[in-house]
Image (cartoon, rainbow, N blue to C red; front, side, top):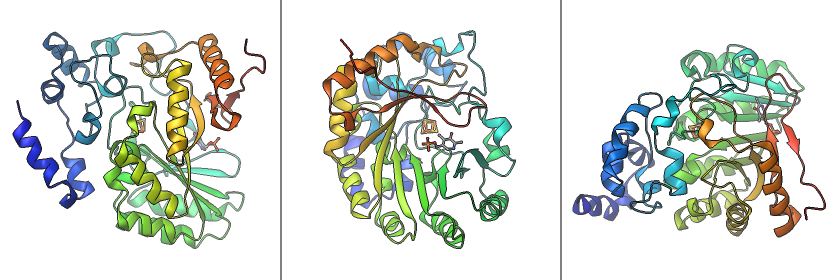
Length: 345
Ligand SMILES: *Cc1c(COP(=O)(O)O)cnc(C)c1O
Ligand code: SF4
């Protein structure tokens, strides 16, 4: 048991920076298996699959998982499995067409009025279902030398009213880097909204530190934070406190989830997620259909079942707690949104 060592870590946690928590993330299958007391016969497969896309999970997120349970919905999202080697028809490396729509400077300008900036390739967690597990970050991200070109692109196009910081995860950037980017965007008068897409706020709530909160509060643009939680149990007291700090800084908080087989593909689980989100001040926004990316087929929920789950969800919840079921299609001008059918029964 490694309990004594862990105790020391958690006792001094308040003194730890989020960077330190990032560095202390679990990145090998052996440690994860030992920590959660998982069945050893699954370990070789986990080691192999981690070579396809490295394992990465913050320690504090592992604390929210059940011990000894391979089916734990939080564990499923980060656990490498041999099944990722399976070749499934229709599952490819660039399922959403990000390659072709990138202008080469880390700006994805696919949708009217909104430009998405790939600020960094780094994430606090590696989600096994991620559509970017094959994405060539080195070639595409808008950090470093690319940054100037990305900002110039936005400055030159007055139709862009919203800049979306994405990645990877923009909250992998230091507060200093965010401040520098913010100063450049502040010069561009037609940018009225600043949106951040981040899973870090959920998996590593330490990231929502005083410096970040002050930066958000001082933005001249309206700030929208789209967090990414897939299950109610991801939102513990630390995450709730982080959401309160973000709301306090004036940010509008939304959630996007991905519909994942074995994680959240039933109405009761999704209803609990919506209610938990609302209780911490976050409105459900999108429920994404899985992007058909190689190595993720075992997470897929077919369209018929997705529609049925959404209809049942709509029958349980007030309309404002029902997310929009969305699918991204290569080459389309917007995400394709499916409503729920009015008469579900
Ligand atoms: C999803 C996405 C957006 C934002 O779409 P919304 O429907 O406004 O949330 C913008 N640009 C790109 C490239 C996207 O993939
Ligand atoms: S945090 Fe987001 S971008 Fe990063 S691996 Fe997870 S889903 Fe993908």
